[in-house]
Length: 313
Ligand SMILES: NC(=O)c1ccc[n+]([C@@H]2O[C@H](COP(=O)([O-])OP(=O)(O)OC[C@H]3O[C@@H](n4cnc5c(N)ncnc54)[C@H](O)[C@@H]3O)[C@@H](O)[C@H]2O)c1
Image (cartoon, rainbow, N blue to C red; front, top):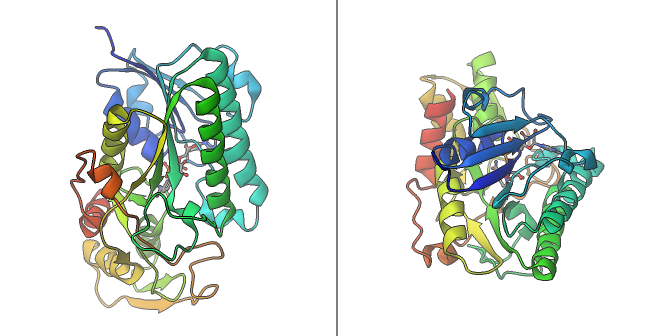
């Protein structure tokens, strides 16, 4: 069998990465680089290890030796990052290292190997507390309030410059909150874990008014691949859903999904009513730009949450 593309997925052992591998492995040669720093182990990709068109390299993008023996790839899907937004306040240097420095190393590898296509996972956090909602891609100035958002914005700038210098096409996707199978962080995962430990009480970080839009992981991946294939030049795209879902709605949906009753919900108040310092309380991304390519999600924001609860509980 001849596989159509030779694809590198960085962070491929993580949540979105492992779902991406599952999608691509049917008809592509897929290599994953992941240092397993944000995931428990290689459990999400173990099933692919016996396939001859799958290769897992447990390596760190911050080490230059990682790139020495790598072949040329047709496309790189760069998902590796320090995805723990909350951790940035205590350890901003980790965001800088795993997001900016790692991306710079990858871009240098692309330059040397003359790799011509990149898909990059950015985030709604680059906008900070946007005054326009739903927020379109041309909103500015972007004023992130977390080092996570700041380092992703720096990545976008680096990718833009490298793609212009060295003539490659990059599709930068600013994700809303992605939910679904293999997730190891975020509100749904956290609520399920805590309610399994204590089915009588659920403490919610923040003042409960936080409201964000959610996208199901398969929609996120399919949209990236679809839009990247249609897009002609380096560009930035939001990926999300119309409308938002409040954190209280998520808590109640998880309680219902776990068939619990009489759960006492308490609110921690947090910092300025946020879940944590750097948490943007309300986000809603405009999705008109990807819709103009003909893209439509299978799951809306609330449906994405329902499906994720089913998968994770
Ligand atoms: N999940 C979301 O809601 C969401 C929202 C917006 C953006 N994103 C972005 O999407 C991407 C994937 O997110 P995810 O939720 O799957 O996160 P994840 O933490 O599950 O996956 C990231 C993977 O990258 C790996 N990694 C981190 N640093 C590395 C390094 N230096 N070298 C090699 N591997 C390294 C980790 O071990 C992990 O497996 C990330 O870039 C994240 O910032 C995610």
